[in-house]
Image (cartoon, rainbow, N blue to C red; front, side):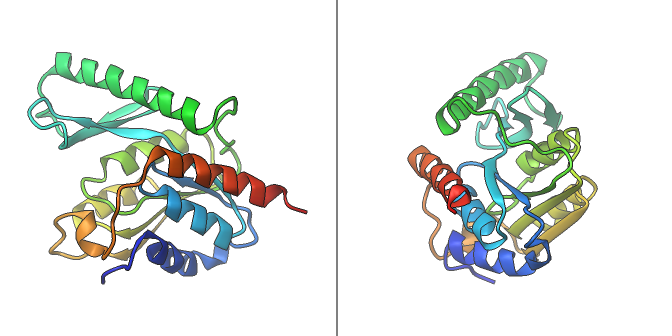
Length: 212
């Protein structure tokens, strides 16, 4: 299964999640790549868009390799003990926490994150490779008391998909191929999403929800 782009993937996820239309779900996108998807999904389901701010923790030897993840409140998980030592891990957590706090100030200036308690919360990403950021997001959001917590992704590595199942009430994944190598291999177009696009998507969603 190959998706044209993130919006094509979002349309297919919306069809799979159609039962939640009318329940005013809170769609929480993992920035930055998943935000255009989350915006389309929130509109299709007549829900609300926000971001859930988590960031992978890179290893000391390869910053691109996720050894865990951290959320904007400093809650973290470590998925690979070969991270480079506790000193490195502490410094990496502090650095990524500062990045997340800067992103919240940029994305939602003067506004607190959307309230999760008692709501249908759908966490969306454009795919799961290691799944570390999704696992951190789900673990953190569970503490916030949603009525139901869902994970929605177009594509995932089978092992990563299995790891998130224990953390969500429901997992919707359209494709979990055995030959998974990278998320981008399942999209014809997989451009980088910039901060300005995230800000614009959040502003459009707020405007949509206040229209008479």
